[in-house]
Image (cartoon, rainbow, N blue to C red; front, top):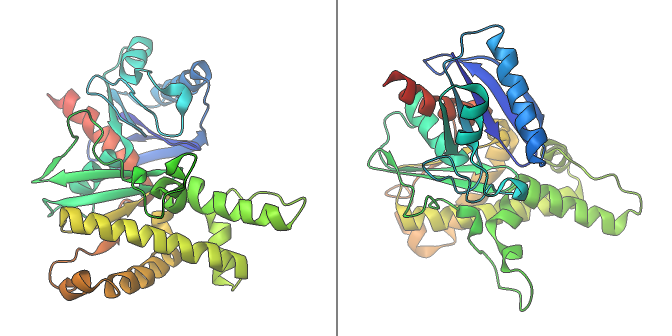
Length: 309
């Protein structure tokens, strides 16, 4: 058995998985940004699992640029963990083998193992969460780039650049992610209109409002779908994948997928070159099969490979 962690900017998903990728038990906890507390929380979950199972290793999925030795060059939105070495730290604390994988790469690996990409050799994964992560698989192998940075799709800029300030305000991360995009934009708009507005923390609330016809939720979500669709068309054009798989918590939301498909179809049809190739070479955009468990499963696959050798 293995313990898996899928670390996000808001929550950490954890679970115990077997050698076939089956999730035996799982839970979530709030992401702690203070390193000492962060490691203490992970260690607590590992020790709890060891009281019930014989744990052979620990697999971690994390945002940001992950080096081969487990060094976190960046850690997505968790700036306090930049420069940490999860592998080195947890192996020292537990005495167990540890592997660390970028979160979107972990999703891509999981989907190839037991998900919707089993029969694919060239595909992309997008993980929508606090930001937007990307996994690239070429000829059946994860493409990591020269420095482990490949797949930072969230850095792409999709709009007219501001004359001053951080250009990332018009990036995919800030416009088409769930937390730093959709939720942030909705809350900022409401706070301008309602003095004591209590911020929304769950995108499902915004989707529900939009589905019921709420004007502001409709406006925000429509732009969110357009921005995400622009990013998807850019990626399809650059990589010519067999498919793009959408992962993250939102991957289980049927309303999200329905509305995204409508908007993506409109964007593709209004792009003359892309429209000509629709039904011929333009890749479909589909949800991950493993939904919110994909990161955990991909993380455990990596450590299972190490232990098996």
